[in-house]
Length: 309
Ligand SMILES: Nc1ncnc2c1ncn2[C@@H]1O[C@H](COP(=O)(O)OP(=O)(O)OP(=O)(O)O)[C@@H](O)[C@H]1O
Ligand SMILES: [Mg+2]
Image 1 (cartoon, rainbow, N blue to C red):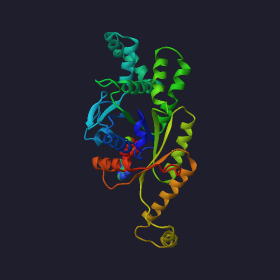
Image 2 (cartoon, rainbow, N blue to C red):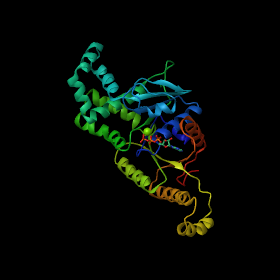
Image 3 (cartoon, rainbow, N blue to C red):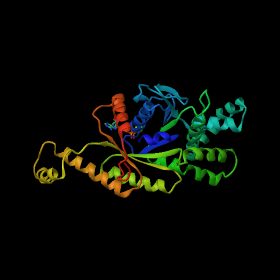
Image 4 (cartoon, helix red, strand yellow):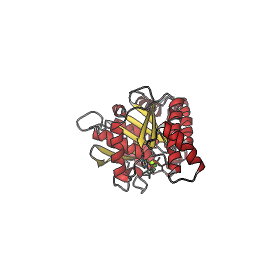
């Protein structure tokens, strides 16, 4: 997976509960351990007690401006209102006017109500972070990893530029969209990664999401299969055990059958998609220990699509 660290942005998506936040933190930790300066981002209201990603680094909340979380890792809460504020300050370059504009509750209600405007705010916030420079020049972070909310938002973000450019082909919003596309939609610089579990339903949903994404300009980096349990049985052992497990109530049967499903789901995924596939193991820790263990796995990982390495 280390090849992913050469990108500027990784957008992490997938169905609820599959491990998007965990994968984001593990990738960030692995990239940071390889010497990259990383910014990780999640979406929500800043300073609210809902920063799942922040919590993995021992913080209750994250703010709309990046804060240090660990060595080489900063964290930020992507917030549509921050994007609106930054954008309006470009269009109306007088600070007092910006503040007055944003104090208008009618304007704020409009910005909050229109779904594309919310996504646009988040997109613009992402863009300002991608543009941010370090004091010595050059980008402030080598890599930005974004923990996107569940599936629908990924497609929303992937189709945002086209939707907005259709309505507003010119002007400052269009310019911002083009600039954002240059970073987040360029396969050299950016990749969307779909996290899934090695089970039938999540794999089916992952394939559906990939199909949806293929109709957009979003560069697809690959699939991360999370919580993979190693299969220690040989085919011959399975042939003997399968009928026994099916016919008798044996301790460990569920686990045994579950492990068989892991291999079947991985095969199904490999056969149905041409994108790279990586595995992350299921570990028996949680919190920072889990992230550190998974970052070891990221650093040791190789591509699982059968054709590389
Ligand atoms: N590889 C793993 N090994 C063990 N536990 C894991 C692993 N990956 C994730 N978990 C656990 O699974 C749970 C869900 O993970 P996580 O919060 O990262 O999922 P998510 O996709 O971000 O969920 P949500 O949709 O709620 O944002 C957490 O309790 C996490 O600790
Ligand atoms: Mg999450």
